[in-house]
Length: 331
Ligand SMILES: Cc1ncc(COP(=O)(O)O)c(C=O)c1O
Image (cartoon, rainbow, N blue to C red):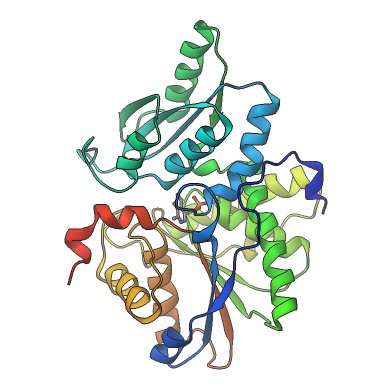
């Protein structure tokens, strides 16, 4: 596996820490839970998209782009980080925000939405759910071309094979850190949304023959659909890298913690966000990591992990969205 063949910008000058969550582990009565602090990655407020953007923005620069174009939900962490990368590189950024919940876009909202304005987004186009988002982005690119500019389209969540390389790199980092720290992980748990994180980790773990099962916790889609998405992206990512692809049977994307729907609060999410804040001083987010951690807690309570096992939770960031959910998260 030779990731060095791919041009890469560097937005985090260090590996993210792996820390024990002793208080959470004690509260759940085992297993031993550790956390991979990808919420501390570089660019504004960190999170998983920073790893994907290292490869995607390097490609945009190689193609002579002056503007990044991307899409996300109204409180999108991916849009916040794409905009931050654009600012860092001296590029412009145009966003398409999909109203996955009708009426949910509020230009005066807090959280990531506030940061879009603060970091100088060039334009925001709000699209109702069901809009052909690829077409919306292509048409922005065509407008820019008409002005003599050059746009670079980044798919939702940065989840194409090039972006997923960021999480292949993360899998390598986890394997090296586990070795250095004397930690043999029995399971790894992550949120599974646009699938790049899940697919990239899977390709990295499989390619290194790590033998660590990976559990994705869905935030939006039914299990079978999400597992197919993750597998298709994993196969394409493995092909790009020239490594063997994981089998479909290696993909697990549980859908029991989606709750009422994408971005909609659930009791389990609220409990997980409060537990991590109060037991560990760690901020999760209401849309992704709160639900993924709810999955880990639920699995631990139902005995899915043995008490002596070591479980790694990949904290993919998102805390700015907490400020847009104060009404459900306050005591
Ligand atoms: C904080 C956070 N965690 C997890 C995810 C899910 O990652 P992916 O889209 O790569 O599946 C996202 C996606 O936007 C996110 O913002």
